[in-house]
Image 1: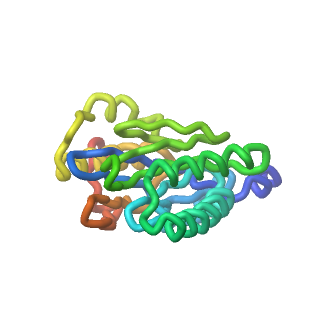
Image 2 (image 1 turned 90 degrees about the horizontal axis):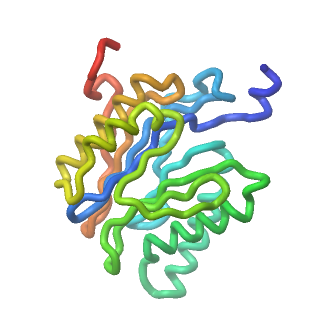
Amino acid sequence: MEHDARVRGVSTGTTIMAVTFDGGVIIGSDSRASMGGEFVSSKTINKLVQVHERIFCCMAGSLADAQAVLKTAKFHLNLHSVQMEGPPRVIAAASLLKKLCYQTKDELQAGFITAGWDPQNGPQVYVVSLGGMLISQPFTIAGSGSTYIFGYTDAKYKPDMTREESLQFVTNALALAMGRDNVSGGVAHLVVITEEGAEHVVIPGNKLPKFHDE
């Protein structure tokens, strides 16, 4: 088992999610990374990566693989922005990640949630799964902790929520997953993305809501 853990390396063993609301989108994650799924290697990983001014991604899978894919994606998006003389669309970022994940599906293990705002389509959420499948959704959850909160998110989500309702929705969902999933934890990172820009919110673990006797 020790050899197997070393081979698999650091995983984000994670809970990630994103949701659109009236005027923007919120993307969030926990901050724990695990080694081979067997012990916690870091409590302070920021899994929310800014790939452009109003476009963020969450990482899942192998941390090194996801970081390598995002580094390449950021380079191409910046080049695309210069060529187009304007910011890239959210779908362009998601499609680029889809292409990179598909091209490396036999070598890398990385999946992403892409969320952002652009003038053409407003707030958007896209899922790029392992292997390169691309789906647009009003909200999505992923990672090992997501298995604990499908029922909660399905029951509590509603279209066109306010900013405050969406913040509470994401915070509660992350808290529930982090309370049950042994490879999710640490602090909750959230980014609120609107036409005005992006705001990063960090909620310490001891400030997260509690729903059961932990």
